[in-house]
Image (cartoon, rainbow, N blue to C red; front, top):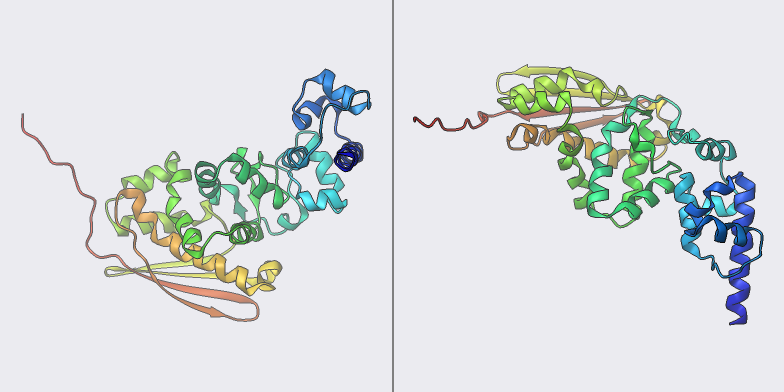
Length: 300
């Protein structure tokens, strides 16, 4: 019991130190402590020790700030970033995701929605905090961010036990973020695979401008060549496994756009050529003859 009391006292002192260190306004204490203002102030001023500080209180603090817990506890975090978050700037990004911001959060919004539905809010919040992002960052899916974030997101899920099959399945839920958009409506109105990929070819920049895209249609085939300049994505060029995971995701994602129109996925052949300064992927889609089924007319 004495050891437990001493440990709880140490946890309380460490939490107070962190709150002072980051400059958290005392009005936010109830969010961290889960108690009313009076009890929180009594704990803060050491006039009452009935509040027992545990790991969950530190988790609430990291979730509020959107900072990886280990870095926060070790003092190894971006203080300017934390202060911006405290003052309500939940769209502020860590330095790692600031350079070459040619992507949008909307490109990964379906993954976050899927995680919240299947793994819960707590899991998703902790995942984002581990990447030093506020759990509220997806309130603005038009926010620009770099491709490294998308790679880190997939890696973080793999590190948390997602199998390759589960990571592949994330591509198939693109409808979760597209179905209520103007672009999603265009996909839904498509009558064939050719219509789908014509629409996609015209709207690649809706998702990102990291890759150079070249499209062509020959008979019943659609050819797509994408080129990623690696000199603009140092983190990816230095981590071939992360790059491979990202390219695999994009390959499978391309197959699922017909599903938005009620058509079967079309999985393309892919050929990858990597050089010291770029990676080029050539895709070949066999569009076939499938067309959207029309509802039967009933004479009355």
